[in-house]
Length: 269
Image: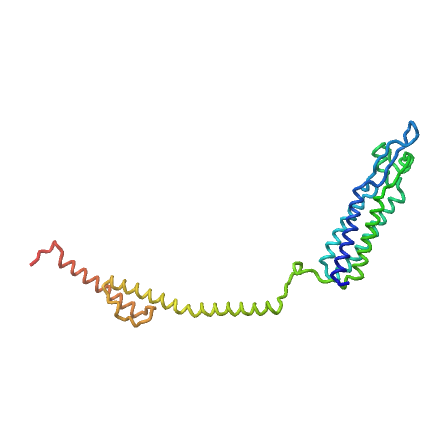
């Protein structure tokens, strides 16, 4: 039998065992008859459920379900620890059920107290006329035995079980085929970055040409010749700044002299 089949079978046995325990816990375990003080005989039967006869089975059954889920995803080392715990848990289920079956009068004592108001093991035992067990305590015992067998099987065959699926793994390893695709994607990304870097100088050149065109229109607006000194670099030097300043100053002086000559307050000769 393969490791995968062993794992599935072991988990199924543990799941069925824990389910039987929880199911039996919710059913009637004993039929109790209390002594009638008038007739000194047994009165009407009172049903006593597993929740009263053996209340610990609920927690044990839920723990069994949790162990099945943990074993399904556990690694090899943790799997051994969980298998031992499951084995002990099944033994605890069998023990709790057997105690209720071995001492039924003590198991139904809480029901006697609820019905009569009498407390204490001695007085309640004196009020019990008869206790009849149903099949459900034996179902709980069978469930505990299945849990024990599941823990034992996990302990013995756990080393042959396959690992958990990738969705439970924190890291994922790419296989050879995916590695080639990853290299191709990386090469394409590198080529795209290289193309973008080569396009940057062209973009800068177009931006500088646009700036020069705007500067040429500004110089035309000021009355300057934009072709003068066009071979210079884009960044203005100190000499070019001074030359532009002197040109602008001369333009303003010429405008002032022209305005003075054409002033209407000065008589023409």
